[in-house]
Image 1 (cartoon, rainbow, N blue to C red):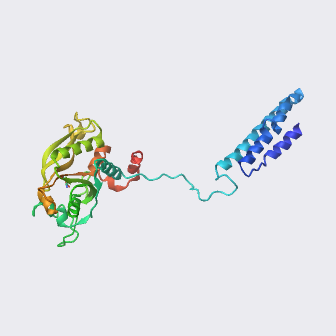
Image 2 (cartoon, rainbow, N blue to C red; image 1 turned 45 degrees about the vertical axis):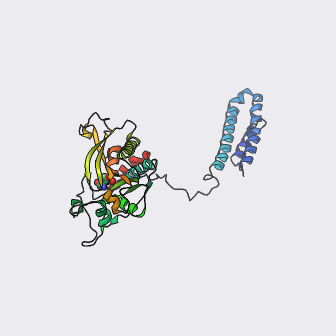
Length: 339
Ligand code: DAH
């Protein structure tokens, strides 16, 4: 019996199989109902009592080893990296983490997706613009302070080339080329000559929306705003509109939402008012429509514009907006689950 056990032990340390059927055949050969090891186990009852302890231990070890060897063969087929002796040189040495979407990209996509559900399609325009598209066509007076060197980066002194200060310029670009109905959402980067601090940067991002058609009313604007606010900040969100002024809209308004931190009760974040400001909007001034070749008597429209950093700040409570452009990997990784 001992000889037989030792012979089998030697045999099973050198098992080879070319495919899974061969492995199964080996399992049946040794461990199947009539397998060699199973038979030895059956014969165990014939072993003399004084030998039972030693032989019993050897038998158990043999069985365990056979099981292990067969499992190893199986694994090598399930996992090709273990198969054969050659290591798989195409495998990476260390597990690696994939990147995450930038929080501003996450928020931009979310804004665009919400407006896409209202039938808006994306339009883009150049970052290097001219005075007409950024200011004049949008009804800015000749002496409007936004044209000032304080705010606008001019590409070359004396040349009509500047970095756009808002994405409203895309409105003009689209209206000049298209007759209504127009329903567009324009995300993009804008530039202003501001000192960099935790609350201002010389570049940031905006999304502009424009809807022009027959009979577009202020009520349509309000509906779109309420829909947007609730999709973005939750179903319980309330909005309020305050009268404001923008050269390109008449009437103009600024929209606040009920503070999404305290639910409108008042907290330090909303300066105890219960409201936080999120965007500017209004009915497109007929002058702007006419400037772009659209009949201001037949058509009307609404427009709105918001800062993506502002929305991201409200959603994720990022206080220092410099974080958005510093590419600190520890900050970016916080958005892994939001991607
Ligand atoms: N362009 C404005 C800004 O940069 C934002 C804005 C306000 C856009 C009102 C609009 C609007 O379309 O109607 O501050």
